[in-house]
Length: 134
Image (cartoon, rainbow, N blue to C red):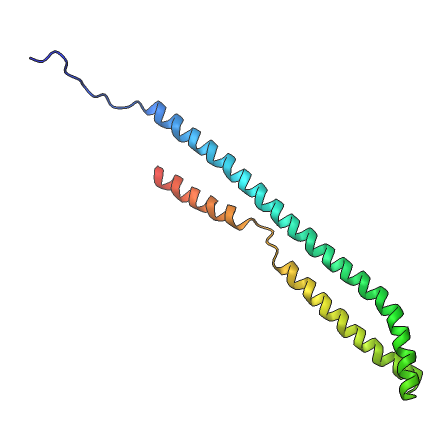
């Protein structure tokens, strides 16, 4: 009869549960870090889009004021249209330019995601994984 027989014992459930809890805690910390990173990236996009919109509005307003006056009087001098008609034509052109700039800024704002998409997807995967563990 051999003296060095080894018997395998079933692992205790306590270390398994501790391991699962430890893994879940680490996973949640990683998810929070990922969410922070994504939120910071979206915040930076928001700041850039806001700065572009603000600068576009200010520049359009200032240039419109001065350039519009010059164009109105130039148009009046070249065509001898009534002054009010020249103001209407030049004002309409600047309104079109302003609309184009606002559309461009709106397009940039639409690219901003306020819910971190990658974090949301990984959280869904984690929930599915936890459900399959039980």
